[in-house]
Image (cartoon, rainbow, N blue to C red; front, top):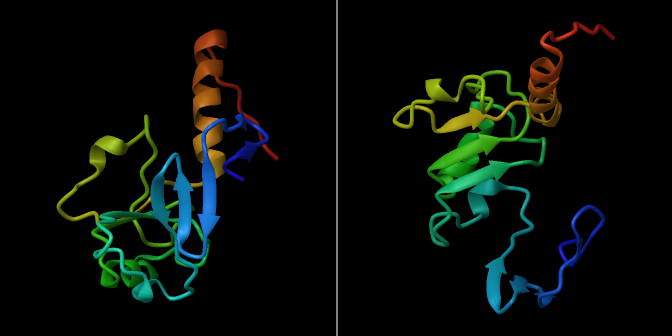
Length: 132
């Protein structure tokens, strides 16, 4: 998927894979295929921030498994029932780095729609309300 991307086109550098991960232009990137995040050695590999994109771990309690694995912060790429939600350009100023160790970055729809809606408001001067 990295070498042949339908949006960005073909990557012209070198891309290799093996049982331990990817090597891109000579730089090795370790990958893991474990269902239990407590088994992933985030701390040992220096991964302070983990982006949780499986859709399985979407609550603060479930994301503690990444923290137990050694991560310092977890960013959920989906809405969460209990983690504080931050959207860039909307409320990122409320993020508290001392206390917010597990956060949600809202949904992909929110992050795709918000910039377009903002531009639409600038161009048209009015943001139209749509209901589905």
